[in-house]
Length: 283
Length: 213
Image (cartoon, rainbow over all chains, first blue to last red; front, top):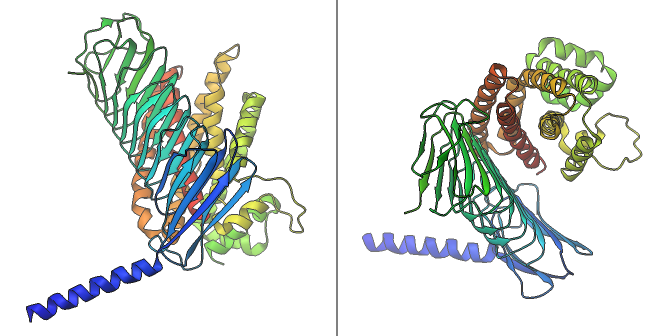
């Protein structure tokens, strides 16, 4: 009895895998482009991963899982548009498309997916990503704009140098590791904002939240002019700093602090309504 | 007449007043009458903006660029059917009303973003505070409910996420608004209110993208 049950399960699994393999359809699209190309990938459901190519070309590998969706692609000079085209009867399950994309490192990319995940790495062109529930990961980017919008998808940025970084997430947690540049702005409603880095030199860093906590971890040699205020929550700073006597807000013990560390090269503004703010020194 | 049918005819109604059937529906339907009131508030607030503190051409250019990028406006095409928002009705059907609401949030955010203290600092501050005070009254709850209905119809599994996020953002707007009311000249409080509206605008934009499917 038990043996026949196992056989039934095995047959069912094999049948499901076979059906998946039959439904799965991989296509490759290749485009030759010049310097500073613009690539847009709009995908309602499914992953988009972008990596640098080894030449002046864009290579798109798209995997579909049903006939309810197809991949539309156009090239107009140096601009490539790729979009998942859903047909009648499409659902989030059957209209998923997974994209693996290679682009020249200097290309600007725009990625959109409701569910994601969205990933980009090792580029130095502008990166714009948007996804309501999508997980977003961006790493090893330099000298570019990085703009990310999510509703509740978590956002992780790692090793972004000289970036113009703007992150908007309503409830997704935002994690910035070794992120620096002339402007780094994070706006959140209820997500947690975490920063681990040195705040660079001569940059402006603004982290705003409504109810989410803000944690910043900095090394002892960080050079910042920092202001922090929680309107209804608590603030905590474990970093020795030169306190400021004049601030633009009414300083209250336990709910705000302001001071400078070393030469105060970068400006850091941490603000939340009811979340907690914690500035700590890296161990 | 159903709400969906009414909202399909909404652009014509706003432009020309609409047929008696539309007006009859408006009398008995609190949702649609709330929606029309919201849109009329948008028109009124837009006039107020123009009268009180005309933003620089850069603001309008930025808004136009943003709307074009979002596909909300295009080059004019010859149309047999005249409508103030033909592209909206063609593209989104009865969800077309979402676009002006999102656009208002965008305009509001841009207005705050690009206003800089200068000679007319006091005027600018006052107009900001008045504008900020007006924005939550723009049918937020009705519009949100309509948005949620739209999301439910197109992607039921997303409704809870949108509902929770809208609730959080509305709480953010209320708190930020309270701060501005308490300290009208506090730049940081104004910035927080702008951020809060920016977050709400983002939710609407994402719902609009979803409705394109």
